[in-house]
Amino acid sequence: MSDGSMEQVRVELGDRSYTVFIAPDLFGGGLASSVLEKHLRGRRVLLVADSHTAPLYAERVLSAAKAAGAAFCGSYVIPAGEQNKTFATTEAICCEAVRQGLDRDSVFLALGGGVTTDLTGFAASIYMRGVSFISIPSSLLAMIDAGIGGKTGADLPGGKNLIGTFWQPKAVLMDVSFLRTLPEQERRCGAAELLKHAILFDPDFFARLEETASGFLKFEDPGSVARQIAWSCRLKASVVSGDERESGRRALLNFGHTFGHAAERLMNFTLSHGEAVAWGMAAASDLALDRNLIRVEENVRIRNLIECFGLPLRLPGLSPDAVLESMRSDKKSRAGKIRLILPLGIGKADIFQDIPEERILQAIEAHCD
Ligand code: GLY
Image (cartoon, rainbow, N blue to C red):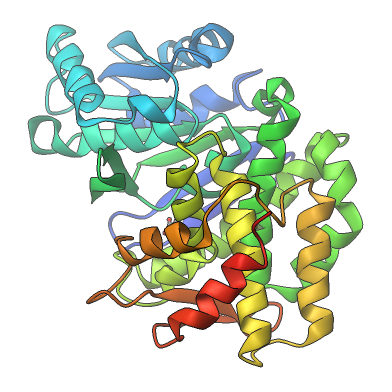
């Protein structure tokens, strides 16, 4: 649904349903406060923002929260970066909430990239056995993926997102103007998850991305960027609505992630998540070709679009054996068997856990320099 320049996407989850609001300048006028009013009026609010995002946008979000009638608006800045996505940071958020007098009726606002929305959602889910939170993703990656769907969590030394909860936000607010300050590399990374949704679910969306990839990366037309984000959110929302806790179809969203997480881990997170996922999607598409699940021309289109978004098809300095070993210990593996999402053409995919490891290794080798 579209309301003037504001796109709205509904995530249907019974009494936990919520709306994602997407607009080119959501926090620029009164739009954000009118959306927030229902959730914040008379309540105590803690804004959690990371150290990169807070100086840029925290003031704007706090003003909107005040205009929405919050009884108290405090803020807390957490250090930016995946290395801070820890249980310790989650605990620090909860301790700060106590210090600022947040009660069971309070609301956490999460402003930042996926690390911040995941951590704040996690803190909200355990603080006083669960309080409300509203997600305000500020990176393209978080708008496309982490900011919606209710997966919250933190990393452990043994791997990414090994602790966490399913805890849905009360609303998600996406201000596309926040993306203007995003470095080119981060735009590309968000585009990887956009591309993922197109390959998995929507051949027409894939074709549109083929036409608009370069304009999209430049954010030349904020209205069009908002519509593309909304479309991608709709695809994700429909999956989440049907399988909130990932007992079936939601696992498809892990396309590219088993390969990608292994590469991220082995490269000590010097590789960004989006680059890793794109690389993983390229390897998975080759594997799908090897298993006769997709046609050569479909594999070529996938590879071309990955390249068009400036994302890597090959990575230097990785040992293919180490990647395979790391994939075995991924939390998505079952009984030591690597579970992979492979495309069945463009717009359709399935889950496989019986692919011979030597074929997986071959696909990895083809993508390592
Ligand atoms: N990021 C994948 C999911 O939300 O299920």
